[in-house]
Image 1 (tube, rainbow, N blue to C red):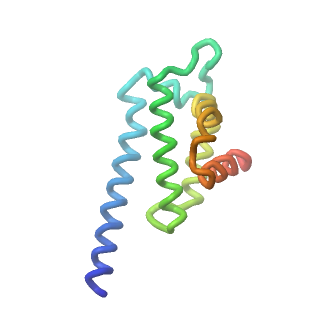
Image 2 (tube, rainbow, N blue to C red; image 1 turned 90 degrees about the vertical axis):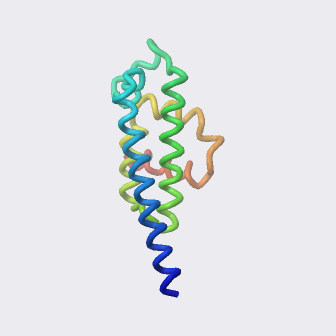
Length: 123
């Protein structure tokens, strides 16, 4: 029993480190690649300058990251659901992520879609 608990804690610590690294990598990507900076801009003009493939891929990667966080939070692992909801809300109120979300959410896990849409309704 003690060994199982120790292994579970070690796995949890490893998962937290991986989650933290992924978080850091995702958010610093927009600083390393200037073509992604508009993704986080509240003034992004999507009519004058349509969404690029690179921007769409980047936002979809972040959506997958949030989906993984939502799954972890639901299982009570590593991520606090309220904190995640704030992060989701602050990201998806931006024009570019919101547009990509609305265009791609039909193909995503229904429970996650409900979670994000509820976060946006509460905004």
